[in-house]
Image (cartoon, rainbow, N blue to C red; front, side):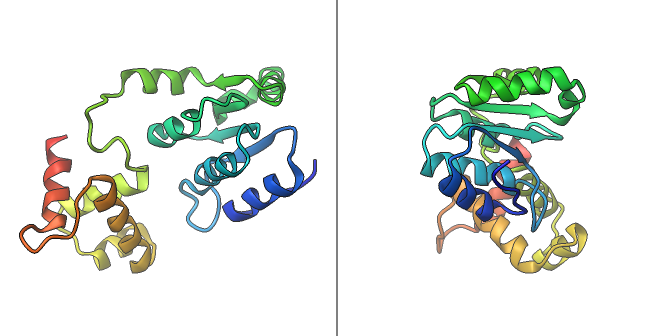
Length: 187
């Protein structure tokens, strides 16, 4: 083991500095424990193409899994934490990723295959979908922050990301929040 880190930026730094045989990354890292680890893994692979990374998650985040697998460099894995209970299977996955292979949990493969390509919400993270669902209930950013036990700034960041991912540019003619909710309701 060359490093143990607690957050996404530290992961990227450690991959750049140590160039490990394989990095084992939990999707949920501080500060919000949502998807920071997965985003950091994608950034690490952007900065060190082909860096071997095995991601562990409680759930499948399809949009990020697409990004992670999209560089076609290999040396990547995405396993649900349920699978690591079988130590031999887990060690085999680590070896395969370190050797340049790709390891995907069957649930990840299933969700990638059945996902609708035309779904405008597919690029949203689970937290962004949650924020959008609360927006659809008519809640303000303050109410959403209270409900999710996060800061208003975090909610504003998610709302900006939603607008960007749904291609809703600022406009004098249209209200982006309403358009985002309409997109959500149609999906």
